[in-house]
Image (tube, rainbow, N blue to C red; front, side, top):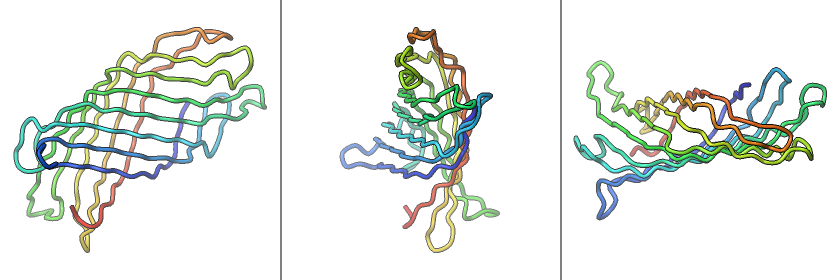
Length: 212
């Protein structure tokens, strides 16, 4: 199966807090209308939603707002796959995922004469501590009940750069890759279910104005 499509979101980062200069808080909220496809058929305009929060501490400062950070991250994802597939014989259902990650971040400034507008780069890494996939299988039929699968391992990596454009507009293109392993197997009334190993690619662009 695959879920593909665009997302739109907001990113918030707070650093250099009064009394806690090394603490950094981050939050992301994004949603979209995407297309689900599998061997059973296709569903378009499916609602997806992601909310992420991170608390990071600056372990190795290289300068203000730069260096090595580490901390914890929480993510909540929602996908609405309700609808009929395969001539109405297969039904979709809602899915929610909640996960806690060990997070690390490295931010470093750049000063290239060939690319003077390229200001910095950022690398983010995450290791899954605990992941829970909740599937509302009772929406499929009365012989099924909702199930929660535990995901044992996973990781993600993200590379982001900062480009100062015209009139103070800051652009931050990024690429993110996430991999999560196969979950345990649980009973769901109509049978046993497990969450397969999965991967996710995200290509994005953050725009900030006025400049920070």
